[in-house]
View 1 (cartoon, helix red, strand yellow):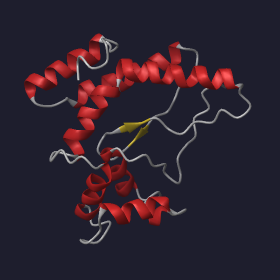
View 2 (spheres, one colour):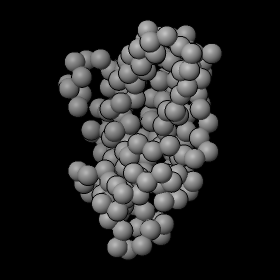
View 3 (tube, one colour):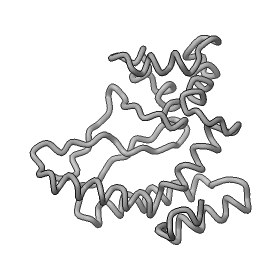
View 4 (tube, helix red, strand yellow):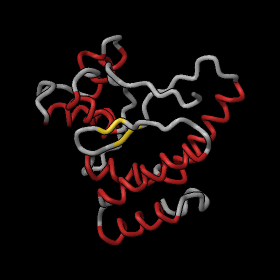
Length: 174
């Protein structure tokens, strides 16, 4: 992982990953620092300060954002800048941290990981499987998953892209 990005990660993220490789896990302090650095990178590029979604287990996620009225060029630049800041500060450490919290068995299917968590948390029945989760997510209401904090924590930790029903929208260009 340390060599897969062509050296485009911050010294802080690299140090945290090296500590994780030798110590067995990413510390919460290193994870928090990575997200603070990511936020500062976004601000330094001239955007409004984002308010990250923080889930029950400490996992962070960038909220949905609104670019209504912005030019295609401004949106492209925003997306490029978000990608650049993410890769520099949080992409790798976020992957490792999410895996250690929500996928210690290293399952390959994120929906399987999420379904397992939803069963363990008592949110879904014992026979709930990844295929059913896929169908629930495709339904307009997501079968009550988008308005349940524990369910959202399971989904986000597993790496499933889902938006909370009460999510605050970020306006980066204002």
